[in-house]
Amino acid sequence: MSHSRFNQLSRRTVLRGLGVSLALPWLEATDSLARAGTVRAGAAGSGAGAARGLEAAAAAPKRMAFIFVPNGVDLEHWTPATEGYGFELPYILQPLEPVQNDLLVLSGLTHDKGRANGDGPGDHARSASVFLTGSQPRKTDGENIRSGISVDQVAARQVGQRTRFSSLELGVDAGRNAGNCDSGYSCAYSSNISWGGEATPMGKEINPRLVFERLFASGTPKEVDKSAQQREILRKSVLDFVAEDAKALQTRLGRNDNRKLDEYLTGVREIERRLGSSQAAAPLIDDIDYQIPGGVPGSYREHLRLMCDMMVLAFQTDSTRIATMMFANAGDNKNYRHIGVRDGHHDLSHHGRNQEKLEKIRRINRFHVQQLSYLLQRLKSIPEGEGTLLDNSMICYGSAISDGDKHNNENLPIILAGGGGGTLDTGRHIRFDTETPMCNLFMSMLDRMDASVPFIGDSTGRLPWLTV
Image (cartoon, rainbow, N blue to C red; front, side, top):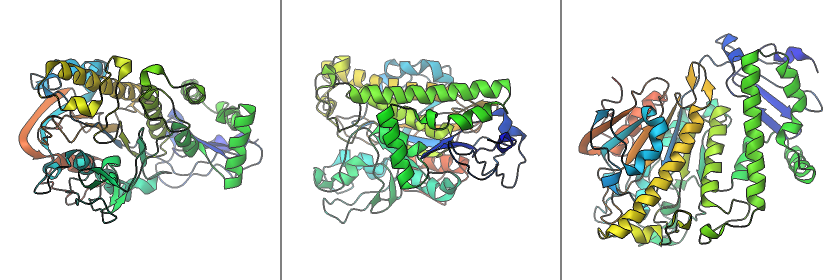
């Protein structure tokens, strides 16, 4: 293979093999590119393929992701006691200590359209539907569903064409888009937070192996199938199919870039290993009530973490800049035996201020925050440009129900993590006036993604104080 194909690298340079395309992470060599035009590193070859640089990137891109958790939280042990810098993390948020300076805790935001507003029961279904749309869903369990376009899809329409995938929708619980799941509301509302249009839930992928294959598949359907079959039969890694390209590239990289490339490839191989072992393992006894679709981990915790890893990989390789993830569907009632909680989550959320139930709710809330911390620390561990992947991201985490017992939609538990490419002043707790629309946060995030719109949902403007 001619090494001249790697004389110039772009943000789109990939390693290719039969049915496999492995995008590269940010490398120092990328910074030496011309800031305009299109760079091509030669036509595809045979055998392991050839790396191709498609579009020169002048700076690290910004990403945005949204993570939904159901049933609200125990706000007393979620909300910091003080505002501004140097706040003390309450019990539920303590797992975020390693990244406290990289996040904003936002209090006071409200989703008015999550309220009944004359439609009666169905708070859980509304909470998922409204989470990213800010729109009142039509109460129906028929085919005439209606919500609103979600903030992630607003961004995908404007910047999604810059990446291989305009957006990535992830989850761990299977859902359906028909039937009655909550007091006359379609299951489509409970199972989705991403909406491409008023009647178009985007759906989500819950199998981490399929997400992995989607991220790295390339070529004709026949080549992709053949590659997958060979890797399965021969127990090979995707890295074995791009080994020739990787070896040629390494001769053209400096010491720091070779270290970064080696760390990246090692990470990919480790994720593959975990995917294989998790699928082969029997369901863990502490997760026995967890509904396990075929081909996904038997452990809820490992399932969540693998999905977090898929998001990190997608962002690291600039395969997409927009993602959503549901830690569970709205109104979810799984138990958490692995942390000593045998009761169903939704059942516990109707705690009636019972202290024993509230203590269990706090443990569940903290467990979810631990998985968020895992994601944020993974993003922070990856250098990119002059900062890290987390510095160039905005990760919005929370619920559209505040207290699961009251089913209220004001003063929502919301965290915004990451630096937004240097546009966010993090490490603070900010308290907004109650009834400040959650959609005002979305407007502020869209501005930072260069995807501004006149409004979204019930927005009334942008959030102040996010930067100083």
